[in-house]
Image (cartoon, rainbow, N blue to C red):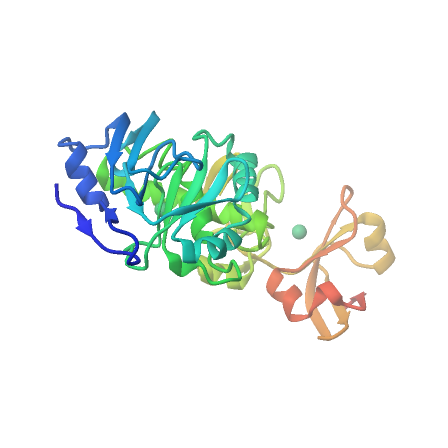
Length: 352
Ligand SMILES: [Zn+2]
Ligand SMILES: [Zn+2]
């Protein structure tokens, strides 16, 4: 059984890490992930703390004699063991941090939002099913950013920077508690499914917790211009198009022939559009009484003046008149940001 061996601090006598490929060799000869529960007894020198991807007890006596149980079936690559001069700091009832003494307080501070993160993920994807969620801070030689070992995420110490700017790695590893650890790809070549869905879940968590824009395209409008026209995805700014790798044409939402398609993935499922991803032409929805007031009809152009720190005039705002809308001008986020619209002192809409 080949192990990578490394020393951490002089006081720590052992610290073993088994890379995923070796766990794969240890626990199975089959060509696909199998799931198993396990019980383990680990003996170490007396002053060494041993932990596993199992039911770690924060109050366990450090005596060199440790027993573990993993009652939920896990795929073999999630079997993990660590040993070293490790102390525990609680973050909440069910979450905490294991680290070497010099790092423990800093790590607990950096990861103090962990409980909130679990609650956020639960609100999005259902209960956390693994009991405790602890984070083990590894020595700097740990070759990955993090590893989603169930109940005990292994994390690199390089994310502990004092300002929580890198805790998205914890969001990622926690997200694996749902995608990857509960539901696992059925063949090794599809490991990308684990990582793809987990990156998505990670973004959803960080979006709710830290940055409403981190998750990307929360404000898109998916609609059809009328009952007999296809769905279009509008409200996608030019900058979003660059991020998505799409060359987006400026169109009205009924006019989508030859435009790029996409798959929209959200909390309630997904929908595939063969075409219809557009930069919506800037437009003004108007009730017939508004159109009367301005003296315009559908297809006419208006001018929107934004007064404020970035005074801007938007020409060519096309009118869309109907009986069941109120007056509303739709710009994209690039246009809104360029004109500092959120802080505008005043806006004026006039006939061109
Ligand atoms: Zn991952
Ligand atoms: Zn609109």
